[in-house]
Amino acid sequence: MFQFTHRRIVVFKFLLFITIFCLIQIILYLYSENIHIENEFNQNIMNTVINNIPVEEKEKADIWQIEIPTIGLIAEISEGTTQDILKKNVGHFTQTSKIAGNIGLAAHNRGYEVNYFEKLKFLKEGDEIIYRYNEYENTYIVTDNFIIKDTDWEHLEVTDENQLTLITCVENAPEFRRCVKAIEKEEGMY
Image (cartoon, rainbow, N blue to C red; front, side, top):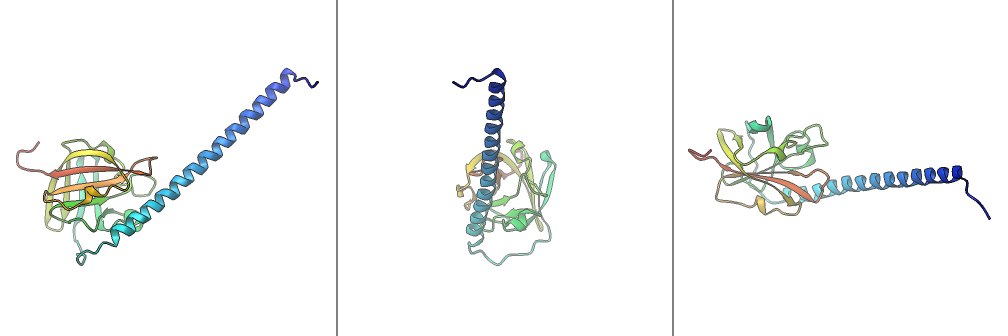
């Protein structure tokens, strides 16, 4: 009968630990790669669906930017939400308004050279957002900051009320998005 000495048991446990540790590392790596691929896939689907919606001829804006003083953000806005646009600017959802109604904007929050919506999660009710489009400038007040499914597009629908809808990804949760809603600031508000 084969007997294990104390030393052999310790070596066996050590090798077992190393094997399990390596397997866990491989699984975590494969999982993170899968999330990265899934994020790109979801972004490509989202861009294809949104950017293929017919819109009136696009206007060229001399000034188009968003400013959020509480998080120290001033960023240029460009038409569309493709990866090329979001690598440089905040993107405008083409099916949403540019001045009146629901203005929808998107930007990265991590993992890129430009992460304009990185601190969006810190916005709270009452924070101001200043939106400029050519001669139009308006101040909006944050009313909501919440998480939605990546398939939930109802927040970008046309509204009679002037509002901003800001959307970005949620860290380590590819099936969700952060959505910040802000309404037009009225006299005496806040």
